Length: 473
Image (cartoon, rainbow, N blue to C red):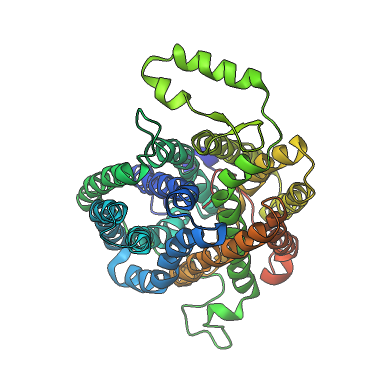
């Protein structure tokens, strides 16, 4: 018997698809980077357009609306075009969305000059966000299930998590780039974010066009999978609808609520850090100033992390909090890799249930406003969210054969939770405070934990093994 390392990327016919896996993995880096920038954009529009937290959550609404609108068409086109055609189409749409940020920025400048309304500028940016999300929908709908068939089926969940490790890397650098262009200031201390917001999106547009060309000239095999539930044959008494399988239906609900919780925590992270964190020790500012003075070309990035707020205490600036979001995503990535050890030894549904429970505890502590303990729990929530998206995904499409593409579309469609629940979390925060808003993701994590612990009953399977923890949306 071959070892797991040798068989992980080898098909039953002996073909080694490791290069194809690496190429597909680059897509996970792309949407991680895009999502990382989206998550630090809310505070920019709150300040520039004087929006409430609930209003700024329209950014997440536009982003996840793209997933909702295109998930079913993407699943249908994936079946018609195959993996390769669907991926190329998704990359082209992302490029169009990236280029759209150039005219959107011009509209924003017109708004500053009083030529158009601020709402018009906001809508222009939201259109770009939604358009990019429609392209990412193609990529996620196709790439997630595709990684599960690129090798030995025993390691399907391991591959999807391994591929999405680059998703976490992209998510780390997204907030860093966002802080540079969304919260930049000129020599006089005036914000220049509206003028430079398009720059990273222009880079994305050019990069994905290059990637589309690479995919066009590469060998991307269309691989059939086994049909454990006999969805694709005419066996008497066989169920031909994915909706008759509780483990899939509940995965859609769990993914809806997980992404809702994730989007809320990520998008309001800057608000939490700038308003709820206890007074920052003066030594932190002194140390950062010293580092900036000796950092050469990094001095602009390291400066301006702290300021004295309206209450007269030292606090994070929007730029500093945006960069701290990258630390949160480091916790997210560490959670993925450390979780790999657990998921190789224990059943995926048990680890999902455990991590869901830990996040219920973490968000409740944030709700209680316990000072630095609550701040620590915000970062720990990143850690325990790490395995959730890909593990729910793998548990949900378990045994569905070629219908996994269709099932994948609905699970991706469930990402719409990220459009709806953050507005509720923002409304709670507007009415009370940002800490109290964490009651919303807490309720979501309760359901995720429930799904994890009850998955064997829903799927009528004992377990799904061989999962690593390196993935997530």
